[in-house]
Image (tube, rainbow, N blue to C red; front, top):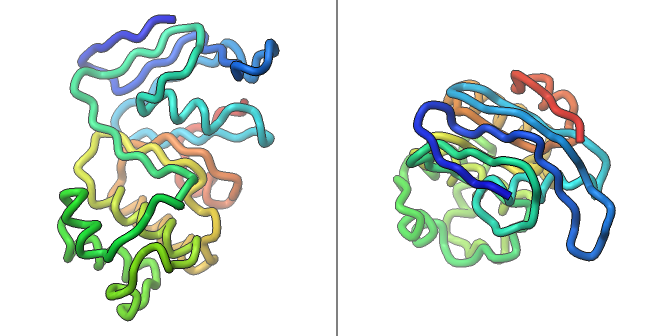
Length: 195
């Protein structure tokens, strides 16, 4: 297991093999890829194939693996996890806590059909789709080199899906993502890897 840091590319993964601690079988093996500026790399595969674990590994979670993960020096990653249960407080406080511009944050939420009345409610009372929109808007407002999104469209309505795709095209970030929605994957990815 080797984790190296370098300057030019964002992330390079070589011969990555991963298995869950409770299993002796590999979830995936010999996966290799790299991502550079403006690339949008999507991962597909059945549930339980390690897609979320791969993303967690890339954002720094300590997981056992073999192979080489090389991360660009000073790389800043913005991460949208699947889990939204930790979200709480008002949007004003949330924006301040994460050091993002509140006006831009709320403008992005409005583009995703977020009603202004929601701005005064506690995030813990939001629907799952609204919570996911909060995480996506936060991510798009962060000044990062790479955006790593784990199933961002869970619980998201079709109108908002279209808006999110347009926002990604507008912001044009480098991305690594997992998403089951084929139309979304095909619409934004520059490459798709199957696990």
